[in-house]
Length: 88
Image (tube, rainbow, N blue to C red; front, top):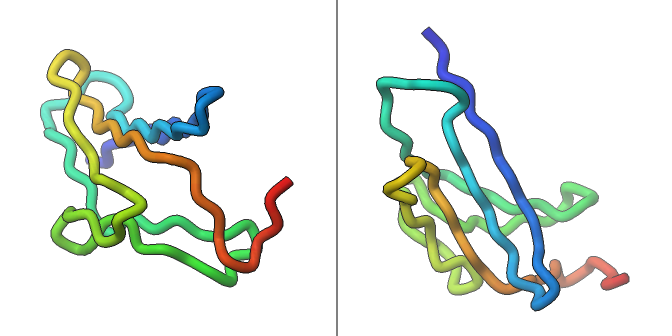
């Protein structure tokens, strides 16, 4: 039985990004995240945000916390750019 999930990624006016990972529908399973990677738009550069144990791997990303009300995982972090990408 496969469980589906949603990734919601948004930015507020203060350049604070919010990453939200949640299970779709009712599930008897809990949620855990690991091996989280941010890739540049060209897929030629990447930053490991969370390692294989689910621990933050880079200071740019403080990790995920669990919303006890919804069960979703939420990460809040400041905007960053890849070294070769142009900021528009």
